[in-house]
Image (tube, rainbow, N blue to C red; front, side):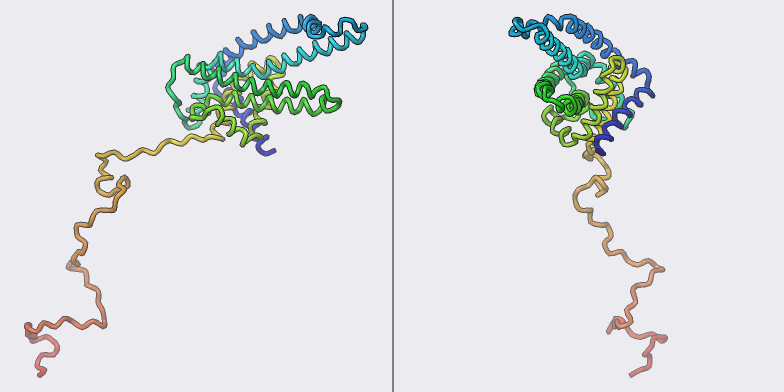
Length: 312
């Protein structure tokens, strides 16, 4: 639960970041607005033709009596609209990120810059970045669709389908939303999609907490657009948490003076000192050993003031 709460805090911190940088918030709204208009048009068409779609999908009910045929087709039509809404939630971020790849890459880089810097990432042409983003988004979408079909079937289970399944659906959708949103900053850190999934699975509570809160926000169409720039900023902050960037250590150059004289850049042993046995200065007394007898020079005659003078 601690990781879940931390994920919610990253979502809040991302919204707070764009609130402090209003120009980047407006910049990040452009792709979300384009995607929202297209999805609203698609959902409107689906709702209008839901009855015809249900009739086409249930030809076996043509000969049924009136109430049972209507119940089955209304259920199928509602399920189709619900499935379309779920797919819209799951794919909204992927499509928005695909459309707004240059926008959100700049936004993510700005967040990295204000928070202490981040990796530059590989220098790829725009078409190559779009291709990688589309391929990764399709792989995530297929995984999410598999879970969506399973949850859709579980929705017909009495009681469980109306209580447990919706909660699980929000958590699953939230996890895959986090996978999508953290794709750009984690890819700049040299992580392929399988590595990103493995990393996020190791912090499942964090990923689900961030994404589940975002799913609940995305249930309101207006907030879907307004919260998208903050979601990108929060995902970048989350990526910095689970995959911190460290600047590579600089290697000492050959003309570094510190490396030449045994300084910090020198890996070998320190050079031999110029004066390994310095002589004592005029004011420095040598070490006095009380048990050591003075050196007797047999060729030196004692002076008049020397002790022992006059002794035989």
